[in-house]
Image 1 (tube, rainbow, N blue to C red):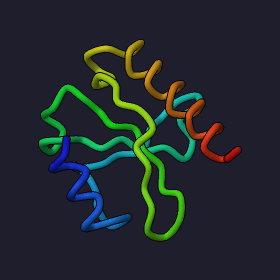
Image 2 (cartoon, rainbow, N blue to C red; image 1 turned 90 degrees about the vertical axis):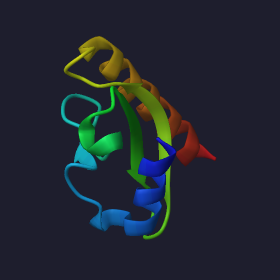
Image 3 (cartoon, rainbow, N blue to C red; image 1 turned 60 degrees about the vertical axis):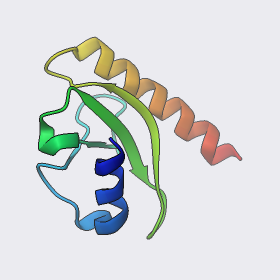
Length: 88
């Protein structure tokens, strides 16, 4: 996951598939998932771009096809943490 985060830091919003993907579904608007090991990892950091140079990982969950409820829970936690982050 550290390598995936380093790729995001280096490439920023230009980092594309298969290393990152938009989060689909309810509550995921504006969030993206990092896909470590070009999508071969079972874990997905859920992040959001806050400004031109800042990306924040708000949660980590399992890959959606393996554990849909776990992934949905991670997206919910990310949205809650993002809301608290925006309040501060």
